[in-house]
Image (cartoon, rainbow, N blue to C red; front, top):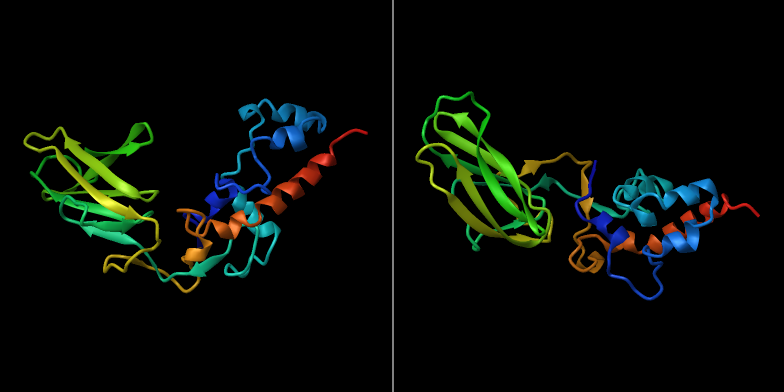
Length: 237
């Protein structure tokens, strides 16, 4: 199992150097005029190439898929023995730090209510760009409530918890999210088998804040050039 939380971002990183192929003009340089497929490509996202899931395929195309630690177009990874999970029975503060992509579990006490266990009865609101995301929290029975959330990037995360249950106060908290996965060990971490791999923690392989990003970024020119050759097959002389 390869758990990729950030390396794949290196494929479409904005950390451009002068000799890196620009994805913004890739359509005009390689796709435009390449047969009917090239003509139709412009109908989607105005010809801008989208590469979010591509590294999963690239991992199989170049390199040895039986060796996650080796070099491949889909990145290079390291073995990990745990996946971060942190359990809080309180609202957090800036004294609390977790790794990005950790599973955060908030366990709260409240009134005993007459609803089926696992009913969504409160909500956690977190910022998302210029908008927000709202996640459901659940009643577990016997006055126990819980919600899980996984932060996706390094940031100062601020959140609010609300409920329509009578007598339930509005709650708020904040915490620091670091960009080093899986972060410091916790007793509540998920223990993994011997064949679990994830993004390289080598500081030299970070692309800016992206852990492991350079293990894929280094191949982007070769990948896009190879794809460009295949578009040439569709051109009519």
